[in-house]
Image (tube, rainbow, N blue to C red):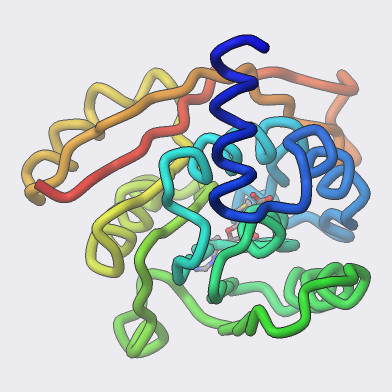
Amino acid sequence: MGKSEWLIKEAEEKMSITISKSQLGIILSKLKVFTDADLKREEYPTDAEIAADVLWNAFMNKDIDGKVVVDLGAGTGILGIGALLLGAKKVIFVEIDENNITVLKENLDSLEGLEGHDPEIIKGDVREDQDMEGVEGDVVIENPPFGSKEKGIDKEFLSRAMDIADITYSFHMTETVEYLKGFIEKKGFMVSHRWYYDFPLKAVHKFHKRKIHRIKVSCLRIKKG
Ligand code: SAH
C-alpha cells in the first residue's frame, strides 16, 4: 500500500468515513447546476472533480469532519453538500439568488443519508453586514465571483470569510493570487496551502462559442495567524 493510500485508510478508520474520494466526485457530478446563469454574478459552478479534490484535501487537513462549515456564494450547493457528505457537523449555505437556492434545495433533497446534518440556507448578500449577522463557523469554503465583472467582489468575499472563520478555502484566478496574498496578510491571516487547477468554465451561457473554456485557478487554504 502506498503512503497516500495508507493515510487515506487511516483517516477513514479514525473518522469512520463512509465514502471514498472518487465516490464523492461521482455523487457531486450528479447534482443539478444553474438553470439560468446570471453572468454579472459570475455564476459558474465548480467542476465536480475539482470540488471533490478540494473537499478531500480539506477533510485530510481535519477541516471538515465535525466542523461547522459556511459555504459563501453557495450557488447550487456543490461545495457545502460535499462537506456534509464528508461529515461536517453543520453547513450554512449563503446565496443571493433565489433561483439557485431552489436548485440547491432540490440537490439537498435528492441525497440520502444527510439526515441529522442540519443544513441551513440563508438568502443574502455576502457584502451586507445585516444579512450576515449571526453567520459563524469553523471553516469557510467558497468559490466566489472572481471579480472580472464586478471589481473587488473577490476581496469582499475573502474579507467576509476571514471575519467568519479562522480557516478558509477559497478559489481565485491564479493571476490575482499574489495581490490577494497582501490583502490576506494585512488582515492577520496567511496562505498555508495552495492547489492549482485548470478550471473548466462550461457553456452554461448560451452565447459561449467554445464548449469548454479553461482558466487557471488556485484554491487557497487561508489560516489565521
Ligand atoms: N459555490 C458554487 C457557486 C459558484 S458561482 C459552486 O461552487 O458551484 C458564485 C455564486 O456566488 C453564484 O451562485 C452567485 O449567485 C453567488 N453570489 C454572487 N454575488 C453574491 C453576493 N454578493 N452574495 C451572495 N452570493 C453571491
